[in-house]
Image (cartoon, rainbow, N blue to C red; front, top):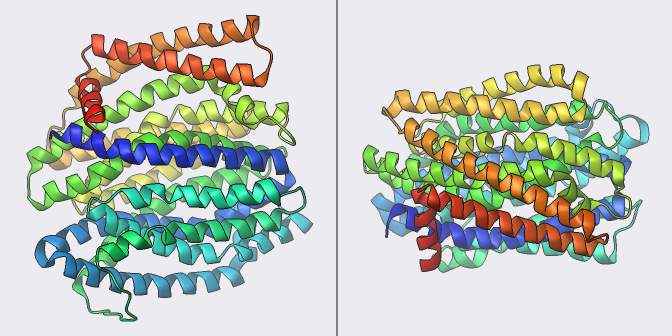
Length: 513
């Protein structure tokens, strides 16, 4: 099977499970918006959740990225037994680290909240500190989650990590349907803790099937443990600066009108839906392939895998950006506007959604390029690039917030992501030689043309039908789905006419799957 077919096969499975999870996540966000609105309580909850998870998300994602090539190397040299020994060792080390982080987080919570939301005062500040402390067990659960998923991905077992979002969202939905009400935001944070525990629990059967049995044993002299620590620090710093962008946005938004933080959060999650379902599925499959090719010192194969992965991402993200620009307002209104989430919240969220979408291509390609550097055991380049991205984002934030309020924060993030992604392309070219930039540009121009035609047709189909035929939300939803379906069909037909070869290979891989 070709690399493109292999990517399509596994990415389809990951994408399907992730899509189901994200649909449930949409329902979760809709219910949160309906029950709690977009204001005092949700602003406080989102800041507290950011304070709770920001450090461990950074460490965990960095650890997951670092562990995959290390597990791959151990597997080639020592087999499954060696991988399982290392899994047990790293799991115990992470357990100790996360317990210490949770304890530090408890005592430093007031300082953390003050940094993240300088506009919070009085009761809102106290509530944010309380919610942050309630959610600290999430730190430990996330540590387990990332270690388990790193092992499974290195073994090209993608199912369990892909489905862990299902129980996570089911826990939320159960609470939101039966117990949530305005003034019960503490219950939502407790639910977050329970939901986070399911993400590692759902992976345990697959880990046990591999032969793993837990032992209270730590070997600090393990050379692979030392290598992981050496590699993970730059990755962690690179990931931290990305999280720092979120912190900056939330901090500046806390000084704007009420609901600005919630609007940015909802819009960001809508954008992340596309990245999580489609782009992350591709990069998740491609990364172990890149690591294996690098371990075999096959640079030609690395370039081939990279070429196909980047073109697939362009095929997905360019039309998605065009679709968001055309349909942002109806998407937000149909999915969120009900209960305490009013028309003003819809306008604010849809505006942020559009400006976030402008950086969708850059953010997605950056995810892929970072994985290439990590496969080469080069963690320094992405770290420095990420630090530059933060500096650029801060400057743009301070400029654009004056003229565009919260939308300026979203646009700053998009500009920063796009510019620094171009710099990563140049860095990679210097590292491994020509990487086919002309081919990427050719693919981009083709899919851009197809996306523009699609966007124009979708605009007239959706707004023409809703203006003349439909007045109900259900009818509008049906027309929205129909418009998206027709638009996607037109887009892929145009891509086939324009001979975008990855489209044909993708369909073959999906059909085979």
